[in-house]
Image (cartoon, rainbow, N blue to C red; front, side, top):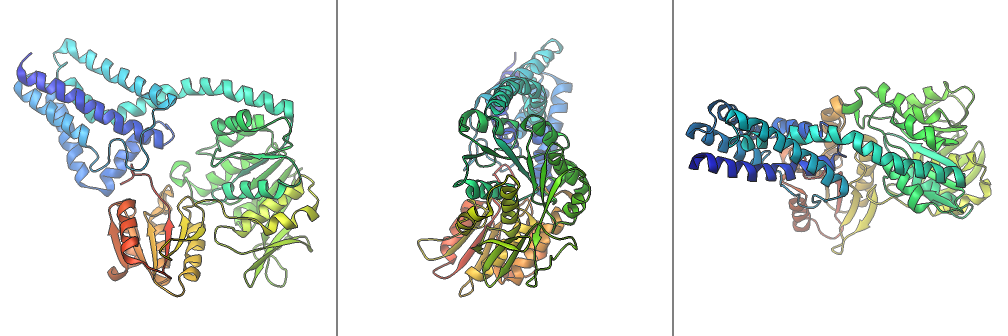
Amino acid sequence: MSGAATTALVVGVLAGVVALARWLRVSQREHYLPGACTATARLWVRVRPPNAIVLVAGAAGAVVALAAGATTLGSAAAIVAAVAGAAFPVPMTVLGREVHLRLTRRAVVLGAIALLGAVVLCAVAIPFGRGAVAPGVVAIAMAVVVDLAAAVAAPIERRLLERHRRRAAAKLAAIAPTVIAVTGSWGKTSTKNHIRDLLAGAVATVASPASFNNTAGISITINEHMGPDCRVLVAELGTFGPGEIRALCAWLRPEVAVITAIGPMHLERMGTLDAIAAAKAEITETARDVVLWVDDPRLADLAERLPGKRVWRVGTAAPDGAPFATTRPLDVSVLTVDGTTTVFQGEARVGAYAASPGVHAGNVGCAVAAALAIGIDVRLLADPLARLSTTDHRGTLGRSDRGVWVIDDTFNSNPAGASAALAELRRAGAGGRRAVVTPGMVELGSMQDDANRSFAHEARDAEATLVIVGWTNRRALRAGAGDDAHVVEVRDRAAAREWVRATLADGDAVLWENDLPDHYP
């Protein structure tokens, strides 16, 4: 083997290791979904056009290397492909800045399958005299290799998960708690937590932690957190597509199903809002009682199409007591006047709580209805209702040691929540300067650009400086903000923190809206 071929081989192997680590982290951050790495690569090419040059150069190098083999030309081309594979996309880090690659069992399995696939591809090239250049070619294609590995690993992971699911199902059947299941395009985590808090003093309740909302997370909740004294299990159910919630409900068998909202979250995966509504509605199929936030027109329509179910219609009410969004009577209504929010069951007052950022009327109303649906005495709800608090990172209001009001809405990136957070920014920053720090909203499909333009326009109307983080939604946000004097562009979240520290002082206010992981551009 010539010196050039040896160099190409060594550079290719090293580049392949670097690329494997990078795309393994991307796959981990994207829930190991096949296709996630290539989708991320396309995003970087689209919003950071110089990466198209890197990718084209790498692909061209790969083609020449395969054609020329271990010649001087082929070896040089393989080195070009390898370097491009190690660098692409620029400037995404390899192991991450704030959230690093975690070598969990699943990550190790995926990495091993991807590495085996890469070795097999290189081995296949040896009989054709292309063994020395093959690692460089594989390096530029590593996103595809990891996605293929994720597809191979998926059935393996399903079989491994099935053991934990069967154990959880057996334990659930033995303890037999009442199961309340909560889903929605947004608000499901907060609603789940509100239900837990409302029930805590009346009945032994377990709620799935954080956003544990798939088969693995719910199985962990039951196997590790649910004891024999549990009488109510509150499970948050998420979905990326049709059939997932139906499969969860087939063994959870919820008696009460709650849908908080239908909106464009994951629209890029599901295609239409109607498809999202249908996927969420799967939660109602096994339930006896169904709680719906009927201010949402799609949920108001669903309420009319559930024969044989006890439907709890929940919505906001005008000061005269009439519902805002539906002509049908509300089973639970929420009325806010002068900063105090009161919840009613029919015409009877349940209780009140002080309006605060992150505690949204729809989530609270649905939580109250779910508690009533399992037979909790309405008189037991007033005290815990008055003490409801915000779920972390979903509109929480605090104050820094320098006196800056801080609204943390980093886990609640949806159009409705973003507008509500801006309204709180107006109040908190009434006496000083205001700023909004955001990378924009994602996973909104064809509606994403419009949603980000509208949000930036609202921020401008709130007289806030818009600090745009990264490049993912920079064009849409800047178009919505309009005035360059009120727009600041920063590379990443760390740079945004520096800007806030250098610019805002006592009495000022900042809204942190969404926080994309750094594998986004």
